[in-house]
Image 1 (cartoon, helix red, strand yellow):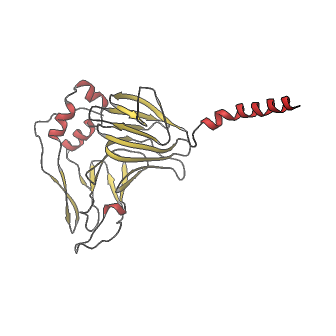
Image 2 (cartoon, one colour):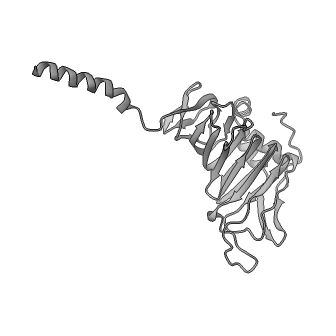
Length: 261
C-alpha cells in the first residue's frame, strides 16, 4: 500500500518537473538572423538562429551588431554599443514593446491590423509608437533621436524629459509629435520648451544612421564603425519658442551614399 502511494507521488513529481523548469512568461519572440560578434543575450554569447524570448536582454559592444527577426515578420537591427529588452511580442494580437536602454536601433515593422495592436519602443525619456513603418531610434547622453525612413510614427516625451517653459519652469510631459518619412525629432533631457517639433532629416543623416545598424556593412569593412563615428552628425537640440531646431555641426561632404535599403 505504502509502496503504491510512493509510486503515485513520484509519478506526479516527474510530470510536474518540466512545468516547474519553465520560467514564467517564457514565450518565443523571434530569432537571430545575423550578427557580428560581440553580441549577447542575457549575458550569454549569441549565435545565428538562436531563439529570442520575451524579456531577453540583448547587448552589443563596440565590435558587435545583430539583426533579429520577430515572429510577426518585423526586423530589429541593433547597432554597436547598444542594449535593449524585448519586453513583449505577441504576433497574433500584434502587441510589441521594446525597451531601449542605450545605443542605436532600426525597426522595420510590419503593418498593424489587429484592433488594439501596438508596436512601441521605449527609451528612458520617450515612447515611440507606430502602426507599421521603418524607423531609427538612438539613445545617448540623456537624448533620444528618432528618424522615420518610411511610414509614420508618434514620439511622446515622458516625465524623464524634464520639459520646461520659457521661464525655466517645469511644464510636465508635452503632447507627442507625428514624424513622417524623411523627418526626425530629438527629445532632450532638460532642453525642451514649448511644443516638440519634427524637422527634415538631411540625406547624410539618413545614410549614416542606416549604416550604423547594418550588420553587413560592418562585415564588409571592420573599420566602418570608427569611420562612421568620425563623420556622423552632432545633433544639438536648441530650445526656442517655436519648438526644437536641430543644428548640424559636423558634416563630411565627401561621404558617399551607402546604397543600403
